[in-house]
Image (tube, rainbow, N blue to C red; front, top):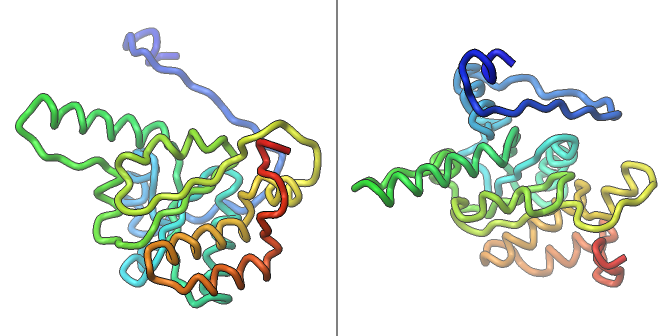
Length: 214
């Protein structure tokens, strides 16, 4: 309120309340770098794995634990090393990207967005999973280098267990794994047979209707 009144800033604050208890990941070290990323909208949960990673997984909100679990499945079941990123705000990331784009357009500059900077050097695909509609992670598509796949909860509201709903909307850990493997296969870095095997193992069939059609 002080910012809005005394400092005359156009800001809007909101609090999101959930009803699921899950462990929050500890802040990675060095803390200063992580703190900067948290405020800018995205930070690496496993900075020591970046050089070895074959795919980048972006998770937001309540789906972040599913993304972390997907990273473990990728390595344990398929030998794929994943770098996990916690996205604190796709909106902030987009604001930064369009600000950089505008500055480059109006000045003789060639600056890069924060997303481009933190993903620099990674030639693997990027998979984003959230419990928002896909339009939210799609906000940063223009500045994500390489292949970008988004998963979200497009469709009508339903009542069921969290596990069942995440499977239905295809944002659960197994859907993230299949999306990552398919992206790697599309980039020619993995055999399509691996993707077929993953779909069969995790029960991810194209036979059912998409969530927004069911």
